[in-house]
Length: 289
Figure (cartoon, rainbow, N blue to C red):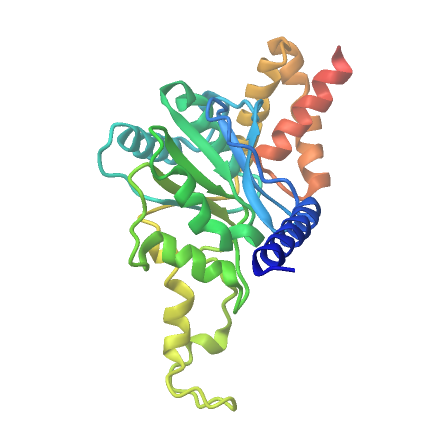
């Protein structure tokens, strides 16, 4: 057997082996359909890709009541972004059910026709941020990377990935990308009383305890725009109920009759939030019809 024959046999066996290995690998994600208004970042057997969301949650900015200052600021920030002017990454924090996530979705609904796109990324997949940036960096559309209910525990890999994306990597954030994140924690990480005791000597040998606090607030400070949301008063809650009951087609008389039930609904839920108001309106209007 000649050397040429040996080489041919080896190459044939190698190709057969590679074919068998490739058959075991997951199929790559297809090229994203960039005409979709929104995307989710998904991982399948170790591979990530953008999954189109054809019918995102449709909510209008006008449907969000009692949060006018927050609406005005995020709408203006988004307009600047779409116009190619300076705009900031946004952190929306505060009480649950007050419209933080809905506001981001409403911004997409308002500006999708102007080229705005939304990419939703779960906290566990933030380590893939460099891949996402590479995918969209040369696209003509403007993208908001949306992280809902964001918070971190110490040592989570996604924490450093987010810090690097916002302002900490040699590679800058592309001009067609902003981050809008919501959280119940203003500084995105748990905070303890001991973190503020800068002169206390701890058992673990921390030499500069105050620097622990600096580390915990360093991520939230990378968001240029902070929007805070607060629990609604009774009158604000009832105003939101009224708006949604009107949207469901109830008459003013029926809406007035619903007042007491709306208050009882909030009491049973232990919360006067926009989400609770919307849930009450759906239930009440459904019973009426």
